[in-house]
Image 1 (cartoon, protein in one colour):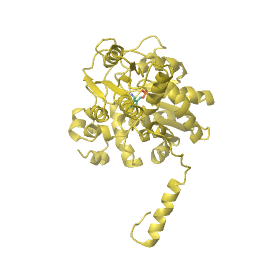
Image 2 (cartoon, helix red, strand yellow):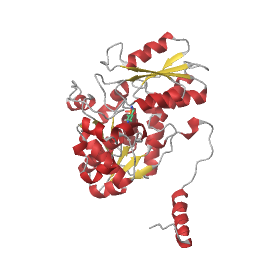
Image 3 (cartoon, helix red, strand yellow):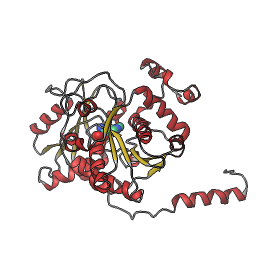
Image 4 (cartoon, helix red, strand yellow):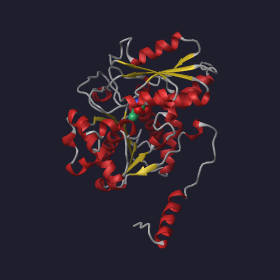
Length: 365
Ligand code: PMP
């Protein structure tokens, strides 16, 4: 226990800090891109205890742009440069739930490009503000069906085609997305656990994170079990569970960044056959876990991180005691605080009662 008053307890403090910082440091790198990746893998100590398995969470919120999308954004840009599609002063256009746009906006500024983003108007406004503060031009557009020309993703494509030296990042079908995880996230996880990875689960947005990590980790351990996860109102779980024949959309969710609507895109199609199962996580489960993660682990995370940890605990139950199950923490709570920590918002969404009474104190807004 740390007491900060006596000389002796100061030395205790410094010993603790020495332990925490004694990991090998990476050498200085050049520019924003050099800070992407090499994120910590955190064993969720208390949540692991309650399952009898080890739940490990990859802290992707610690990337310099604050999310799991920094890695694919960089890969997409580098690939476009290599192919000669993106030239100095060019413009990157993307349809985004926010984090890809934020990652592209950071990278565009640091590499000398322009950035334009289209984002559905039901998503939290702070993401738009961050993109704008990074110099991106952002269009917040109504939610429509995926095959409608006015869908945010189709608008981004059309916009890129209409301007000179414009490139559509196309995170949904651009396989540089999953490749970023095959080449960086997956190998990091494998090394961080010395090759003992038994299970993997995470939510799918574009599917790059799930597909890339699953493909890499299964190439190293063919016995690894990997599960496709979505919130209600998404289609990939039903596509998998129908034996790849059809998909249905039932319900809706306020968890941002995950859940495919109306289509199964190329990054998902590439790896979906590797899945060992697929299931939905309800918003009530995600919100309760969001509050548990604060209370038990001191982690302040976004909704998809909570959904992912719920999924990991469920996958853990399917595996023998002592197994290592890995999931992803895609982003932190900062962007969502006005929603997830607002009593009135939680009540309006009918999830207030899902938060255990002793944890309701964290809803400070
Ligand atoms: N969580 C959040 C908060 C995200 O922004 C995203 C990306 N849309 C994901 C999860 C899912 O990542 P992916 O696109 O790799 O499936």
